[in-house]
Image 1 (spheres, rainbow, N blue to C red):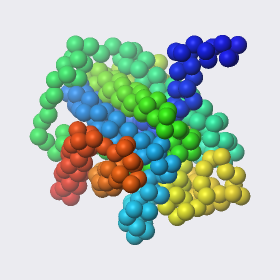
Image 2: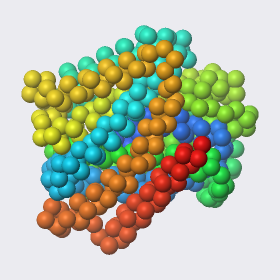
Image 3: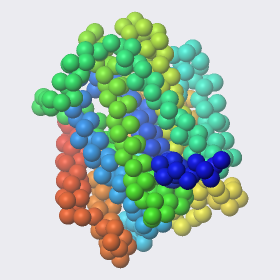
Length: 415
């Protein structure tokens, strides 16, 4: 039966795509984490539909950056931190690792804060929900194989549809949504500028490039299947942007109209209840829980991949704990510390999330410089180096992101 199905060209192509797909879709969707949902919620609540247009160029930049990571993983068979160490030396690698670990740790705390906030909406104490979440994500990775872990992560991606459903329940003015999406508008204020930078920083994060490339390598994607891997990246980037747009749309249709300002995704879910109904609020809160659990698994995993690659230690979900003790030890430590900090009384969680986004903005343009130099190395990439147009777009992305990061830091220093 299976052989007959595979004889059909279209079905055979679908099976091959499904065997390659995963890293791109998973990596992009994880970026809609607690910090991301909070940022998109604030964009909608504070600016209505007026910043929807910015998601289109952000999506294009995300596709470009993720495609380069994917291509390097397929062609070289090595992770990004491994390549940076080999080509640029240990000292530079250590500095990048330090910045990335600090950024990721801040994000891990934010994910467990998202778990706590979402479950408190359902009347569950954080002293119950956070330890349970920590145990679940730890067991998933430590006891699972790459295939089982990937299946769970891909299943988690499906639940982001809750935000799309919530968008329709909010009954937005679709003509106004179209205007916000197709007509760029921007006010030169500190708040508007900070929000644009926040949208970029939360959508294109440094950890994503390391995790995507490591996942491609662990999956052993063949060069002949690279076009399918690129399609995986494009689909992931488009889906994550659509979900982000619907989060902005939900909050723009309800909170912005009511003049309600929010600082976290949990604030948005709570405020939606009297404005859009309990089903919309419940879906929003459930989406936050799913996103937080999803990212609480991936972010420590990404950090463990990066550090172990750079140090030359054994790594990978398919390895046993005894075969990769540093990999699983670091993963465990990040989960324990991240969850433990959230359980501290009166911990200022929102500033932690805010600082992690600042670090994202600082590290990303620097990382992109190394990526572009690596991908244009003919000894490394052969005929798969960037073309002229691709390089022009890539360097423009670096300049724009670098400029936004500098402006972002400057605006923070003036506060």
